[in-house]
Image (tube, rainbow, N blue to C red; front, side, top):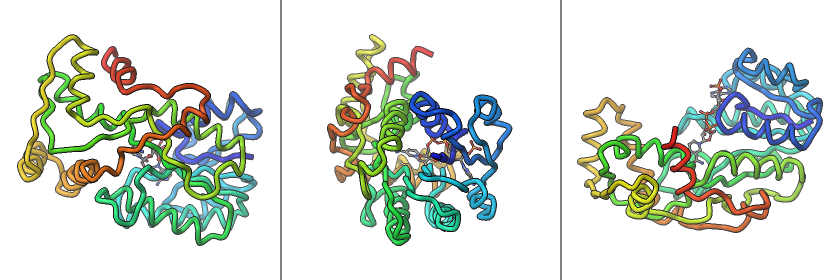
Length: 286
Ligand SMILES: NC(=O)c1ccc[n+]([C@@H]2O[C@H](COP(=O)([O-])OP(=O)(O)OC[C@H]3O[C@@H](n4cnc5c(N)ncnc54)[C@H](OP(=O)(O)O)[C@@H]3O)[C@@H](O)[C@H]2O)c1
């Protein structure tokens, strides 16, 4: 059985749907915080068990019988994040899981300027230390994150951010399909995969051009100094750690940490991954 955590979230849910196209439902299980949100999966024959990363005993039960377990990373940063991941990895070992897969991120490194990539590197170390077979899916930066950043600019037409660098923005649907392909071809990757990316790396200058093409409206790109951006974020009510986290994304992008593009995604999904233009067009059409 393949068990997926975070299966009521944006990525985990899509991964389960792609797995159900490839496997009978009784070979798929989910570990979710709130089983009521996965009732439709239970109705389709998927094994649904309650599992919280804050309750290790629940995870051991939820992971029981997993030949492969896909851990979807927590939406937390720093120690709180790594503690949750450690609890899940320990539970997987206790439950006798055969292989652990983990949604890491391209650029995962102890030296990254982006906190989340340092957390992913620490989690990959924990996986390595289990002695079990493991795979880290080095997911490209979510295009959905860029679209969240662009929400104000969508209306004002001005993309006002700190200096950045090219980022291989990647769609959730492609990442989910790639994860399902790796899960159903066990052992294809040992340890970290190559970066699983969209087809091009765009900085926000290029994004302004893409937004203009997609909408037929002009978009400008204004470079805001880091300090001023931080002040603006705080003034809009962002807590200081979130403002710093956002700044660290720009710093890492300037450092080229998300610039690589790689053919592995296209090989896994059997077609070219979605362009940022397509993803922006779909999102902004809604
Ligand atoms: N590659 C990138 O660019 C990038 C960007 C942003 C985030 N990420 C990472 O990718 C992950 C998945 O992305 P996503 O879009 O699917 O995010 P999401 O929709 O926020 O999903 C996060 C999932 O984690 C679950 N979760 C949170 N706390 C939990 C806990 N204590 N115990 C068990 N489950 C818990 C949530 O459960 P509920 O459904 O019950 O809420 C949800 O299903 C994120 O959590 C984050 O670590 C990657």
